[in-house]
Image 1 (cartoon, rainbow, N blue to C red):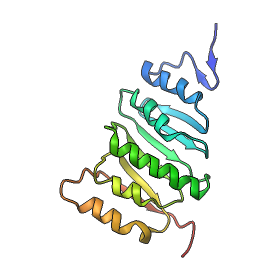
Image 2 (cartoon, rainbow, N blue to C red; image 1 turned 90 degrees about the vertical axis):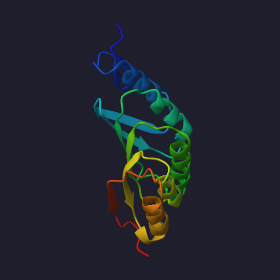
Image 3 (cartoon, rainbow, N blue to C red; image 1 turned 180 degrees about the vertical axis):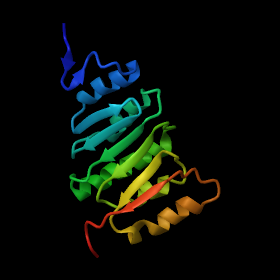
Image 4 (cartoon, one colour; image 1 turned 45 degrees about the vertical axis):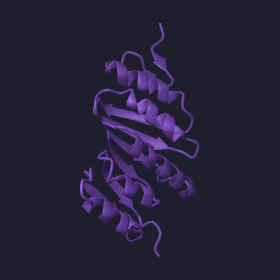
Length: 159
């Protein structure tokens, strides 16, 4: 009898929807996923990840989770495209998960989406001066849905 599919143990005791999502993630190019508990998932994105597919799979998980996205090793130009796509997904979707975003690219579009999406809990920025205006607008706009708890300034590139 089959005990493991790629890195997913078939008798893991995880909720059925989370287990199915992990199996689907194993079939997606450019992503590695680790689940430390039914409430916390870590994702590592590479250059080839299809962001809308990732969000489609995430929608299938019923229980709200905290998802740590890490793509600090991805080239900056690719991070920009991925964060822009993520901002679109968060703006269009009713996402019930919380995200911790770790990267080296400062995405103005991600900061703008904070105004209409409550999904991002934490974000890492390199040069906060690049996104400060969008961040302040998202945090102070009337009717903002922003629930950002932490901003980590991690200097990768000095001006």
